[in-house]
Length: 165
Image (cartoon, rainbow, N blue to C red; front, side, top):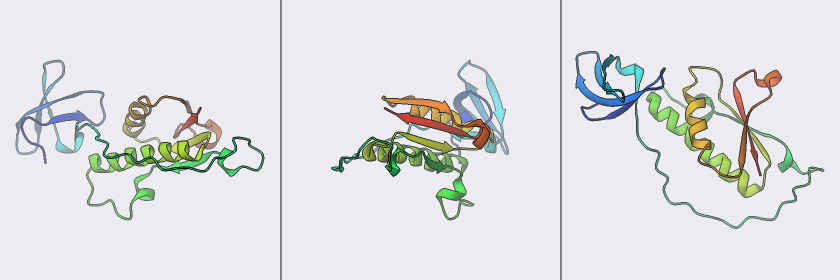
């Protein structure tokens, strides 16, 4: 799974590094601070940059931004739990699941812009916070959006609201 020279991130910590050794059941990582640390393979994910392929812009009907009777002014909820996005995830690695979830976020942001939606809620759950962290990194690259914690009453701390301007 991992090879010497691979860039990796630690799942439950905000740290990354390069694989410098592989033992029977541990991966030796030289972290960004110059220290060597040993991790189990399930504690790491590959640190690969997300590459966006061809982007096609399609013509879109003009939608009214008025909220009166316009279903596009309602908040659209997107459940990012992996079981909602794929039929079976048993064969997927943590990294592959995360990439599917991030791709879904990108698709929904672009769709919301094309449809001239004003708000989306991404339901990510609590977990370790890795999905939320990576989602925030992804969303920070967009212009013309505002990011909030979604309604605490409805989602507790398991959802993020995106307001499109």
